[in-house]
Image 1: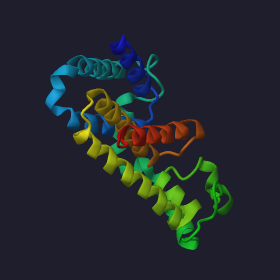
Image 2: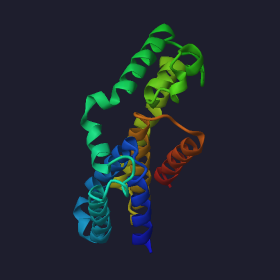
Image 3: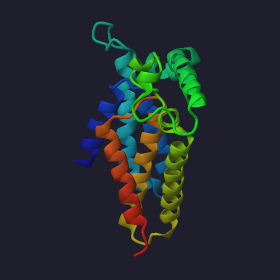
Image 4: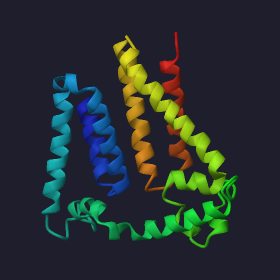
Length: 212
């Protein structure tokens, strides 16, 4: 049952054609497998499912054009490494830096990016760190980064200290999920429905790793 769920979720992720989500998921996998590298044999079935998904996705690329999605998976994935594909974001980020420079201390105010720049209609800054710096100022950004640093410092330390194997795996999964979100948000913009889950994960990590 777990393998089926993983298959469905991974397939859904692939066919979102969202490059930022792919990068986030890949980062989370690398992070998780780094801490599970001595137990990798136990997760051979999960790895097989992921390999099957990659193979199926690769085969779909060679289907007739009329059956393909408007975007080719291979072209979409390879565009991650082409700087010109992110030209719109690069231009947007330059404008965000200008906003930060103009209001470095307290920022322009929450959710005011569309007010202080003509590029707000693009759906945000497409970078969470820059967005916080622009709207909440450097003090707000420092507070946000402090939470993230403490989160991973405490979470990673717990992976070596927790004696309960179930809590250790739970902590690792939550940390990997947070990392996936953070990587994704450096190329996208936050939504309340997803951001709430991210902060919920952070709360769970602090509960799991708190001294008993």
